[in-house]
Image (tube, rainbow, N blue to C red; front, side, top):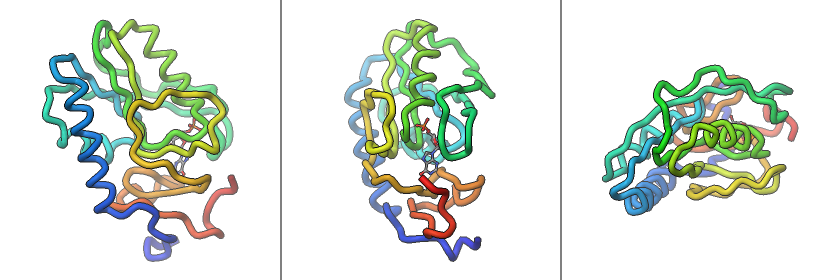
Amino acid sequence: MDQANIGEVLISSEDLQRRVGEIGAEISRDYRDRDLVMVGVLRGAVVFIADLLRSLTVPCEIDFMAVSSYGSSRDSSGVVRILKDLDDPIYGRDVLIVEDIVDSGLTLNYLMRNLRARDPKSIEVCSLLTKPERRRVDIPIRYTGFEIPNTFVVGYGLDYAQRYRNLDYVALLPEDAAPTL
Ligand code: IMP
């Protein structure tokens, strides 16, 4: 499928930039005089974390983790494998996990348990998108960009079969191309 065939725009580039700026301002207020390390979850969160980082006015470090979920490409099983771990310890630090989207919540649930075991001072979650209807475990999300309906989206870091991450907006996939939910 050609990029020209992408479905309806769900969140425009302007709306994304405005919301990222708002979240950045909120994080900057909340993390003043703290020891912030943002943990980006590869690969989907790369675009979001890059913009978010530049909207912060407080000191912060970034690190990355890559995880893969066993099960079908669409439905996460909750059994997660770490493909790339953090480069640095997070003991005693204020960790903010940055995600592209929280769907069932199973991946994030695993990630939080894994990172908590390393004794950070605090751990919170910031997700650009959330699909509350799909949630299977309750995850406290401290900062949310947008709540979206139960539909498959691409763009601004999110992919379908590794494509469309480069779009600067979030779009729906056309019905015939979208994986069944
Ligand atoms: P969860 O464990 O079900 O919450 O899965 C979260 C992961 O599934 C996200 O980090 C994405 O990589 C992927 N995902 C879930 N929904 C979408 C979507 O609509 N578009 C692209 N990727 C998605």
